[in-house]
Length: 287
Ligand code: C2E
Ligand code: MG
Ligand code: MG
Ligand code: MG
Image 1 (cartoon, protein in one colour):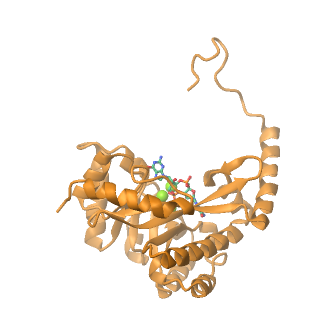
Image 2 (tube, rainbow, N blue to C red):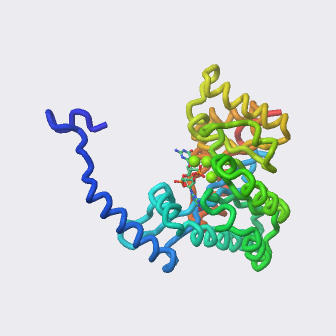
């Protein structure tokens, strides 16, 4: 980056640590205000079913509309929320908002499920299954339409507690997806030990797939393994028609990525659905 920008000047400067700490304190304060002040939005990114070539669901991705900084992406504030414990309140807001969104979709005749992210820090006590059940009930949401995404770190950090929490979640009838699959330790034993429904292949593999390269082989192997274990697969980060074609031929069940749509403000979601379905219908079918 910025290689020859300034002749002999160094391209990068050592960060001023005091300044960074000050900025962080600022962000932390603002985050407290954001929780109280309703500054979050849950964007929705469509997820397509590759067999029926239709959008059947979406992932809910949080955004922070900061009064001065504009839209702040989750990677900038979720880690701080986790460290300060604010993630628990934010996580309950996400569940509440997802349930309200699902109720709205249902009223509008949009039969999509919604999948939301859960941090390890929220499990088990920050996100009690009873609180999820209560929100679903209040909004008249069917458990089949709400999905939770967790990463494998959650499972490996505290196996017994994670297992009990997952059991309770499954008893409510929710599905649980394993997010960012392939980036962590990927010890395969937990695929049998935990009641998971779906693997989400991390976008780093999907983006680098070329027929014959190692990412291609990895994705193909993950799809085959998941299928033989009775798990479904979502490929994240699908950016091209070629990637979509490869995944469909591999027997991957679902796809999500900029090729279909970016995460959208809820108001733009239903219109985008129709356009994506039209586009998908034009791709060649795979038997
Ligand atoms: P994730 O759960 O793995 O979400 C997928 C990320 O990939 C999203 O980034 C999405 O915008 C991005 N993405 C989707 N398709 C493409 C593509 O085709 N190309 C590229 N380059 N990127 C794509 P986002 O929204 O910035 O979220 C980042 C991470 O923040 C999420 O990763 C998740 O770990 C976390 N996160 C988001 N919302 C929440 C939330 O409500 N709660 C918690 N605890 N974490 C959240
Ligand atoms: Mg996710
Ligand atoms: Mg992911
Ligand atoms: Mg990710």
